[in-house]
Amino acid sequence: MMLVEHTQYLTIGGIVVLLVTLLFVGYRAWQKHTLKKAQPDEKLRDLMLERLAPLRSNKNGLLKRVLVLLAIYLAFIGLANPKIGTQLGTVKREGVDLVFAIDVSKSMLTEDIAPNRIEKAKRIVAETLSELKGDRVGIITYAASAFPQLPITTDYGAARMFLKGVNTDMMSSQGTAILEAVKLAGTFFDPNAETRRVLVLLSDGEDHNETGVDIIAETANQANIQIITVATGTTSGGPIPEGGIAKGSFKKDSEGNVVISKLNKDVLEELADSTNGVYIDTPTTEATISTISDFLAQLDKTAFETQTYSNYKDQFQWFIAIAFVILVIEFLIPERKLQWFKK
Image 1 (cartoon, rainbow, N blue to C red):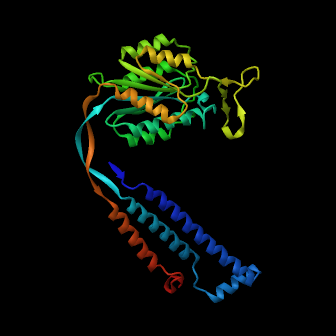
Image 2 (image 1 turned 90 degrees about the vertical axis):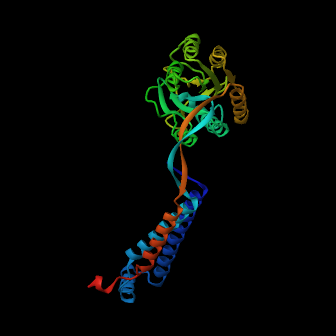
Image 3 (image 1 turned 120 degrees about the horizontal axis):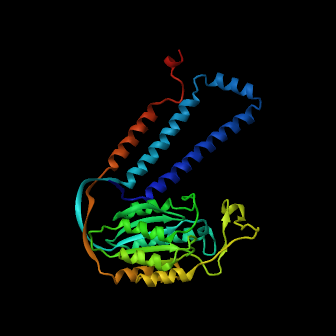
C-alpha cells in the first residue's frame, strides 16, 4: 500500500516542468529567429551552421533537456515523500456502514443547480467523506440498473478516487431504477454484523420504472437500511443537455418539444420517512453535509475490526537518488557529436 505525504508537490512539480519546457521551447524559437535574421536563405543558413559547427547534434541537445525535465519532476516526487506500508495490521473502529447511491441518468446533467446535478452530487459525497471518522463507506451508481462502484471499505482515499470517475456516460441504458440501487446496497452490508446500515440516495427522484415507493421502502426495511435522500434538482427543473453541454442542444420528446426534468420531491420525502431516514433539500452543500453529519451522529456506533497497512516507510530517497543519477548522465552527454561516433 502506497500513500503520498505531501501531494501538493506533485502539482508544483508539474507546473515547474511545464514552465521549464516553455523556457526551453522559447529559447529554441529565439535561436531560430536570430539565425533567420542573420541569414534569411534556409539552405545557406544550414550550410553556414554546418561549417561553423560541424559536430553540432540536435538530438543530443534534445536528450539533455528531456533528462533535465525528468530529473526535476523526480525531485519533486521525492519532496512529496511517497511511503509504502510494510505491515498489514488489524485496527478497531467504531462507526456505521454507509453506502452512497449516485443517480447517473442523463437527467443529472440538468443545470437547475450549479454547475449541474451530477457534479453537485459528487461534491456532496466528497465533502461528506471528509467529515467521516471510523465509518465504512461504499459507492453505487445507478440509472436503468445499478452498478457497484466501490465495495464497503474504510479507505476514504480509494472512495475519492472512484468518485472522480462517476459520470452520466457510465450506463448505456437510461432510466432511474431506485429499487435496483436499494437491492444492490443490501448486498454491500455484512449480514452477520449488527452495524447500522445507511444508504445516502442522491437523486432527482425520477423513477422511470414507476416502482411504488412502498415496494422500495419495504425492500430497504427488510434489509434494515435507513435511507437519507438528498435532492439534486429543483421543482422548477430545467432542460436536459444532449450531446455535450457545450453544444447547446437539449433532449426533446417525440413531438419535438424540449423535455424539462423536475425534482420529484414527493418520492424522496416518502422514501426517507418510510425507512426512518431523513429527506434533505437544502440550498447549500455545507447545509447538506451538516444535516447528514447530524443524522449519523445520533445513530449507535458499532465496533468492528478492519485490516489496514501500518509502519509506512519513506521512499523519497530513491527518487532523489535517481534524479541525481539522471543529472550526472545529462552532464556526461556532450552537446556535440563524438568524433569516434562520427567516424
